[in-house]
Figure 1 (tube, rainbow, N blue to C red):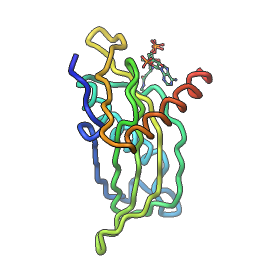
Figure 2 (cartoon, rainbow, N blue to C red):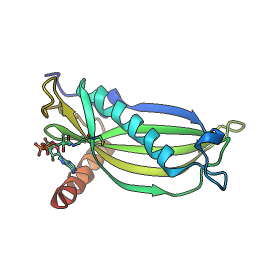
Figure 3 (spheres, rainbow, N blue to C red):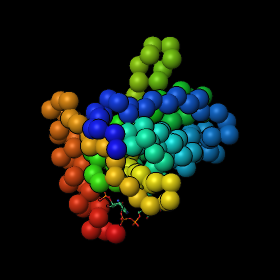
Figure 4 (spheres, helix red, strand yellow):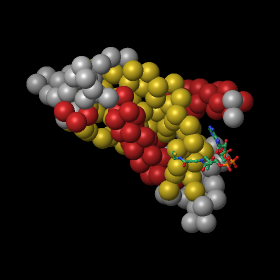
Length: 154
Ligand SMILES: CC(C)(COP(=O)(O)OP(=O)(O)OC[C@H]1O[C@@H](n2cnc3c(N)ncnc32)[C@H](O)[C@@H]1OP(=O)(O)O)[C@@H](O)C(=O)NCCC(=O)NCCS
């Protein structure tokens, strides 16, 4: 297996334009579409870390903090908070970018768990996540607490 890697190694950014087909009856983005983008962005980060296919095991704490409107440019960023044996917690942040000023406004936050799968379809170990900063360490500790709470609900 690959040696440990840092959260920076798997950082993933995705940009989407909210088209009319992504909108609901009041001209804001349909939540399910935003969730699909979050899932894709998070999965790419997990797969970059694991160098394997990773499936979504759980999505929790999704908060739609502000509306996203048809015509908006949406920037999603995903980063690994923690790697356990075969599972990884990925945090995805969604922002709307004002392309005239470059300013970004936070709209959605999500914590997701992905699990690495081998060629036979079994779960398999992932590389360790190596913290490079105090923030990385804080995020990993918070992710471990969330994982404990999450697994009691299985
Ligand atoms: C996720 C999945 C692979 C786990 O398989 P499993 O046989 O339960 O495996 P295990 O009990 O050995 O758990 C494997 C890892 O997944 C984690 N896990 C399993 N269910 C979880 C859940 N609901 N939330 C968070 N983590 C979970 C375990 O904690 C374990 O992590 P670790 O290896 O880092 O300790 C399996 O439930 C699955 O295939 N689910 C469907 C995934 C899918 O199709 N997603 C697409 C959306 S439909």
